[in-house]
Amino acid sequence: MRRFVYEIDGLFPPEKEMLGGWGFVANLDCDFALRLREQKRTEHLEQTLQQDSKAIITKFRLDEFGIIKNPLMFVEDSQLILGVVVPGNSCDISLDESSKRNLISGFEEHKVFLAESAKQANFQRVPVRYVPHNVDIDKQAYALASVWINWANNMKMITD
Image (cartoon, rainbow, N blue to C red; front, side, top):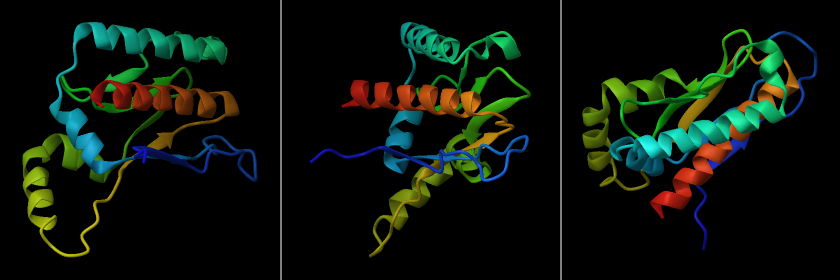
């Protein structure tokens, strides 16, 4: 049986058009995120992923909002991303505060907590959450989701 490592929730047009109204959440499996956090990223891998991401963003014609820089923001030298940014007014999807704390500043403590908690009955790990910021239009939302999904699929493929 195939194990899914992510889920996208709420990626559909808002009821009312407003700036920043395109909200959705990307959830990443906790165990998968921990593996990516511990695996080192090669320069070749990063270059390939950044090039793919730029190509995706270019297809959405977001260059009208600014220069397409490296869209993927990585956590230190790991394969885990902090988030994805696309042209616009600080338009991105990135780790929520709890996930950021657990996977960056308190990473070692979080691993110990998970190991201890796993011994308890009915313990379920909470997914790592990525949340959007300043997503004003559909093209930004779909570009962010597409880049994030492309990254997640590539990470799943190379870690299996």
